[in-house]
Length: 127
Image (cartoon, rainbow, N blue to C red):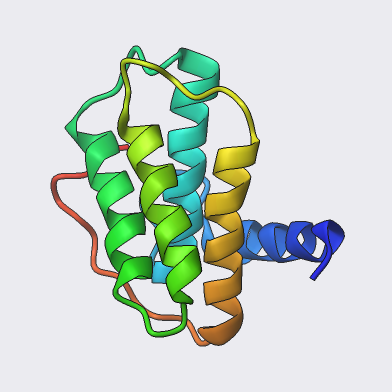
């Protein structure tokens, strides 16, 4: 797939699965919302507001994609390293490449899981 193909998937997911505020109702939407929340905190805020709720978002991405048979082992390895780097909140990662790689795994996973998967709200998550 090309970069424009991935951008199109991202736009579709954002417009159809990510709410304007609060948690998404689907796993598909929450994965992208979580990735963008982590990107925003790192790039815009330098992780000054990093807290347990950001950890919840990072764990959600990692657990969901690591436990899926639809994500190849190599992608899981990259994902684990990328999420670990993101979670190093004392040293914010401000480039796009790492976040783009995480989202590429999300988009590839989505292509194998297009039917909406309902996600209960996490009462501990207020981001």
